[in-house]
Image (cartoon, rainbow, N blue to C red):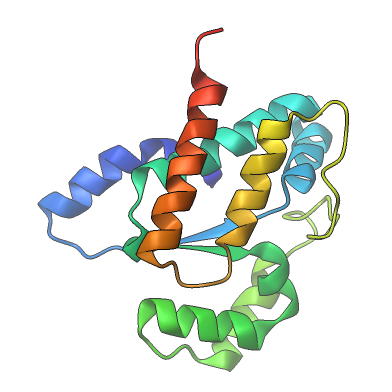
Length: 171
């Protein structure tokens, strides 16, 4: 549930107090799919769906350290089990059983879960979408599907925090 991102500061404190090492695997879904899905399911406007998607993803980046975080593009998870398994093996430093992972993936991706599919190549070009939103999505796409390095993540995080300030600034 993407709303958990709002509660990250709380959970980070809990995990710290009980001395648990935590890794965060964040599925990255095309924001147009998310907004369209929320519109179909809940009657939420597309623009409000884009704002929610932005808030949740920016909170993840704002609250987590690069060593504990990986973004996995949902399209990669759906279409390439081997690549996804290798990414997770490297991130978690554990061997993932490919058959079990394939079964999980097939059970996880139900028609109810993904009622709007556009694919990662969907262009973000619309007079109704701000340049900041486009910049946000493109920046997160750049750091998805790979282990994050401190320098690139720090630079991306700085850029995204500037975008976050833009979204939450009093206007």
